[in-house]
Length: 312
Image 1 (cartoon, rainbow, N blue to C red):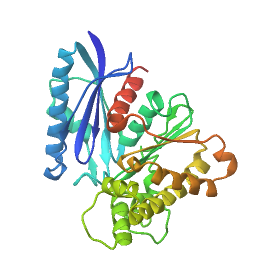
Image 2: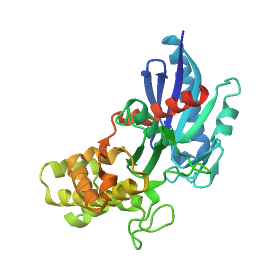
Image 3: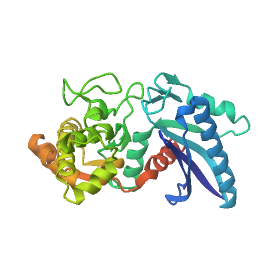
Image 4: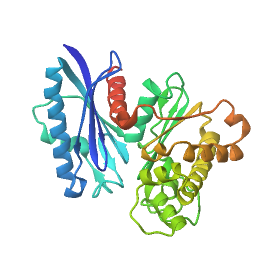
């Protein structure tokens, strides 16, 4: 029977899971359940526990033994506590997630690691994805929220209290729109999905319901409002990339999250704007890459981090 690590990614809509074999860096099975965050913290924990139990059963079928569990969650994460997770209703304070899971699984004695979700994403891309082979890496995930993860010297940077890498909350416009964190002009408030949709409505003079995926499709069909929306968003992203390059001097910046599916119509303007602003020696050899592991990257990273910590 082979050993496996269970990785979960707690998102605002779904909880994704992977059963991961660390000896061969391979996903054995994957699945998901609705988060149902609107029903409260207890419902979310119930769904996490249900998914864990489903994977324990699946592991037996695939002849694997789960030896540890890793969970990636949005928000500030420290010692099993999740704080200020803006896209999970009711999680804006402190949620003792590790304790709540333990209380609902009295018969299951697994080592459990809880880490920030974008830290998990960048760890996965560093280990087996777009940043494999590099030691200085920054990850940026752009969706409803904007999060970051930082690897320096091959090690994840978490900060004094688990709050390092909150790149979505760097200020890019002092008098910009209100962010969910309470500040104005944060990167998240400027390039997250809500901001992109609002920008498109302004350019198209329409209040119709639309998604970022639809805006991207329109842009690829030469719609002027959609093209302008993605170009402006890309330039704002480029401003942030220049700051990231100047602060961290990484070898690779990995871009992930749903917004990045817009592709070159977003990323090309971002690169151009970055090169206008970055110090030349910090741009030398810098690679801007899109994440390779797709929607399960966070869950894979949670498994990889858990394995690396448990192996110490």
